[in-house]
Image (cartoon, rainbow, N blue to C red; front, side, top):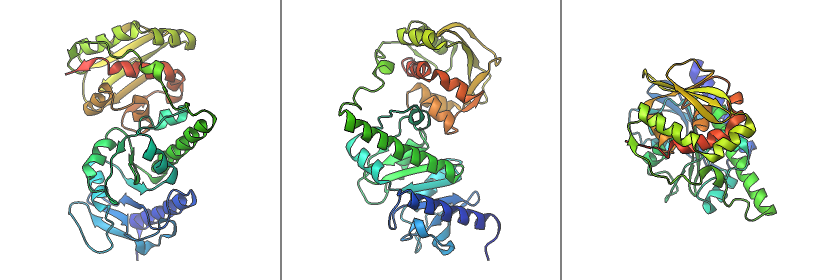
Length: 332
């Protein structure tokens, strides 16, 4: 008999497998699911099983501290194993959605046309794939550092989360974004060309290099923001007036930006702000290098926000430009 957490997790895996099949995100015996049972053990769907009709016997235990090769263990176990070793994820979904596969067989990146897609998906990384199973899981791990959802070109997607629903929501949102992009091209073949050009233009200006999160680094960002015509215009139009602080976890340094209609009128050094964004140093490094969108990092839990994300997203457009300027200031 199976009791407690193991039985509950098996029930969740069976349920999410059926949802994936119902949504036409998996077919036949493609894809696999796993969940963390404890620090060293996961439950993973066996090879050759249909995710839409799983039984408890189709879900097996595997030790992530070992390189196992026993019968019925999925060929994708090395990927699942490395994800759980590298992240505090509790669930992993790997499936082969047809529209996502078709889109990324043609396009190298997601052209997001809705604010929801931009907020929850951002720039979805695409990892090249040359074999029917994933033989270079480390490339997927590097991509997962920037986004909880990764496309494996010509193969499928991988989503990690602290619960299955969040992973499924990411995959469903990407499938919907692809539908929107395809529909837009039916109306206008050039609909996907030049998106976000206004946000990304004129970011080639040269600046000095600074130690990350030094006062000089943040001050250089402030100067760019206050001389940026796009932020000035949108700040006036949208009434961008608020206090936003940024902080590294476990570090005493904190910087508070006082915005008044798009212009930073003061740079202060305290936590008295309605919005505070904090994250580990390695996450901030990816933000400043342009590898991670802070909005997406917040919705996916890589960064923590004190304050109402819904209110902050009111100024999504000027803040998106702000985050583009972050990477224009080079860090050492």
